[in-house]
Image (cartoon, rainbow, N blue to C red; front, side):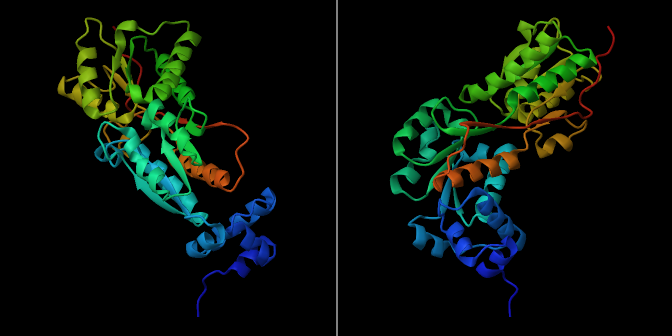
Length: 341
């Protein structure tokens, strides 16, 4: 005796025939969007998972998607944002009866090594590629003729899904300006993420323009998303003759490194220097004081990217090439008005 849902119970829940459910499972492109949504919703409600083997035999597919994190493994598996992206993708893939193969860089200085074996061996039906691969690697992927969705930004002709980086950075800069800060430092990210970093910088510039102010040119520093680079950047900034009263790092890792340098130098946080990050990682809410940051809703981004890829595999391309997901400013105790004088 088992309560395990069957194809017929899914059909009853969705109000369709069991033949229609079978067509959905087998990726029949003639199923209309309303019917598809009802059947997929019923599958989620009932916890129904179609047999991957049965689907593969019916469709001639592997029923597997490659998720590519073109970073060195140590970084990829310690980065909360990337892990949440994979979590969201896996949730959607599981719901739709697909498996997931995860790949990171095989060659340290070659981002394309993260997906090369997928393409050569035809192991998967499509690829979700995080945009850390950089433009050259994604350009090379064009020739592979794979259904591909990029998570992040790309100048190539791929569908891409990314959070509202510009809006998130605008919200942080506006928040710091509203608190009364004028000497606001920015710690930028690495060249491989230049499109996302450019979007964040646009947000900062727009906030300053709205406040009729200029970004202090002497307070722009470069980082590489690691805590060590944030630590070093904060040291350089605080050694200035006219140091910043606030530091905005373009990811939480760099912000946490900057916070450690502030404590080493005996600077009160946020009394002397306010600090903000980006990504809203789990650590942001655990440090003391808790870090003001921007939530990218990474799980939702990963889930949406997987949804679009599976639709693309099924012959239903999205109406738009670029899908922008919302971001949310999370104000915490690491930001406060600057002290007088």
